[in-house]
Image (tube, rainbow over all chains, first blue to last red; front, side, top):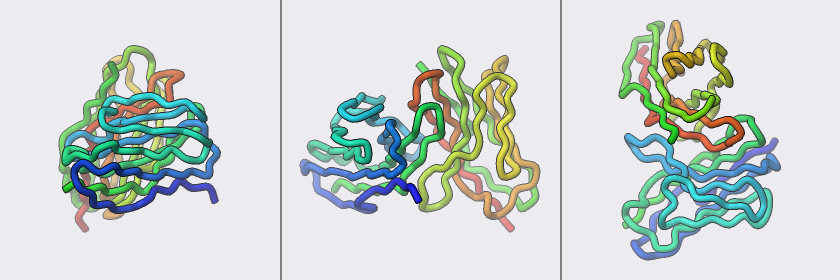
Length: 111
Length: 112
């Protein structure tokens, strides 16, 4: 069965370190998204991609970057982790006009 | 820009009670509207959607009607079960745009 996976599921890191969160989907979807979930804010869009080599900034992109070298993967990098980036991160994918499928999430703690 | 406002939670109900979660939106065009549900410890999954005015989305006993005149998409269920305990998110996407804008989420707890 097709699926979307995220790794790691839990991560603790220190302020200033670079961190990369992995997202892998086997749906062969062109569209992929990264969100962060914080209490009181719902999900906020960090970055998104509509195909290989395409990346776009979302509403809360500062301090994050993504790259899309193939259809299946959209890794999210925190260049220099800050305590304000402690959150739960969700990756999602979709095909044109259809629902987004979400991964199980990564809980990141920056100490 | 686009925005979604949904009722504050948490909401606590007894089994078989009626559930309503209000959702209103602001959009520049004619968006598609969604309700997503997040069960404890899981990612979000689509509950229902509506793509044009007066459409009714329905799934698992939940319903929501796209009301353009009131810019609303309220979620309802006539008789909730303990298994409906979850966080519910209202969301929208603009036509020809695949990004979602989410509301803050409403936590629903159903007691036996």
